[in-house]
Length: 366
Image (cartoon, rainbow, N blue to C red; front, side, top):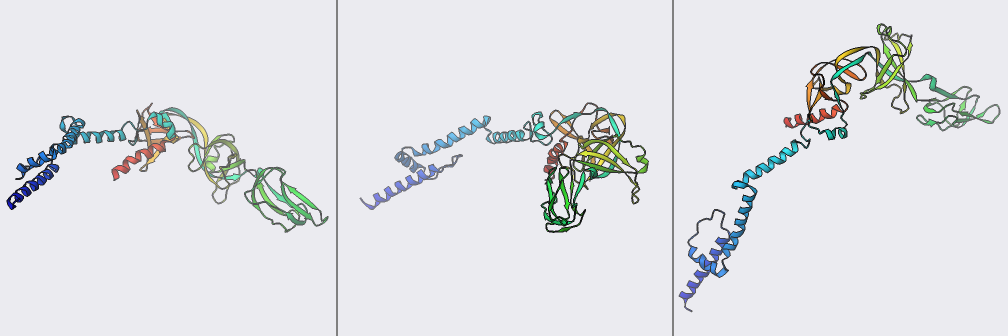
């Protein structure tokens, strides 16, 4: 084979490789063929029309685009899909701030009430503190002089009625005698230790039955004159919307020389142990009743940006409404403006609605 023949074959084979590579990487716009177009035909015949096989996936992809986006607008199809997802997030799914489906109210702890007329109790608000019932407090004391041989009480521990408080060895007889609790209670404080020499009547411990306590409310002389034993009272503490209902148990005549205030005693059930001596409370003492044209539950009224608001329900959406309020009792509050008769409002759990609407403000802030 002479040199001229070898050169010709090299050109033919080189051109074929270039042609196959060009066919492999042709773009969707079908770029113009280079000067090796004539040689590509040779490569195509040698490769079994490989160029057409490479173009098939491109045509298939184009058909899939057209199927997803009628009319050939693939990008618009994607935008519509995205908008659909956005609508699901902020639509009927309840994720949009203020939209809570009826079926979700109970799970969220929200009750619905209506704006309606009501007869409210006219009341005065009195500050006070919790005090232990003195008739239910007793002290354990040594009956005779002696040495304290057994004493295991600690502040806060429980004592059963008739339970052993202490065992004391008498100085006179050198025989031990026992001190037992006259009733069940909680140890408030102790003043003795084992091995201590005791005098007759010396206090060992102070024990109290805390199942009932007093709210001692403070009142000025002018308001004191309008109070009576037996008047209904609602006692509330911080964070307690509902409060506990009771009655005036006693009106103490003593006047505090420092404050010139008198004391109203209200007996409270404390079987759950929620009241501790010294706890600050407020008492609403009912002194009469009056008719109010528009009222909502006290739990309906929240504070937003320093103003009173109520959350009105329209369909499955809550909207915040500014209101002005008047007198109130332990259950409902008078509405002077901002609401209409019959409107539905969030009652218990209205703070949940407030928090849900607050998400919208937080999102806009960003």
